[in-house]
Length: 98
Image (spheres, rainbow, N blue to C red):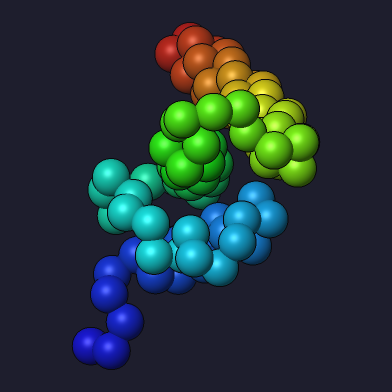
């Protein structure tokens, strides 16, 4: 019992989303979270961490660029999730009549 539960999910998500290593220890709400949901959660967690760090003034340009890149990743994750949900709904609706 060396590693806490869910470590493999965190590492996989951190690798897939390009998240920094410190996000591997970020709390994920449940241990049965999909990779897409966990990836989105970690990206939002990082954005909130950045915003909290620069709450007193305007963020430096490199942080603004990093936030914009994370917004693009979130958009891709949201569209991928929508595609999977649509596929699931269509297959369930079709399976109902078979």
